[in-house]
Image 1 (spheres, rainbow, N blue to C red):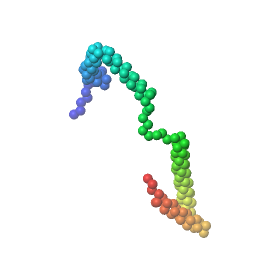
Image 2 (image 1 turned 135 degrees about the horizontal axis):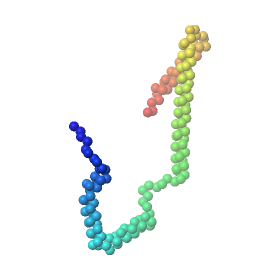
Image 3 (image 1 turned 180 degrees about the horizontal axis):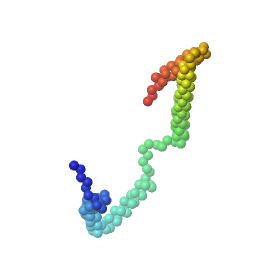
Length: 146
């Protein structure tokens, strides 16, 4: 069904050169004829385009579509961005601390449940731990930013 095309010593550039060589040759011949026929006009056209380019680049003011923000405004924006980043980092640390606390509570609850007899302190701790885990569960169900 599929057959490999033989490609001995064929590269992309040689194939492109074969395909478009006639257009390239014709264009080169046409340009050389124009340059031979009108040399002064071509030279003056090149000099004119250089002068126009120099005028546009150096003497005519560049177009300012929108004003650049002032350095003071840039510093204020950078401070605002910095505080936003600081808030995000502090939120990440808070989430990390909460995850660590949940892990500790889970470990303690499993340790207490593994015991055969539970004393009064352990039962009070379990009640507090369960209420704290429920609080984290309620916070987690409300926070779905993404």
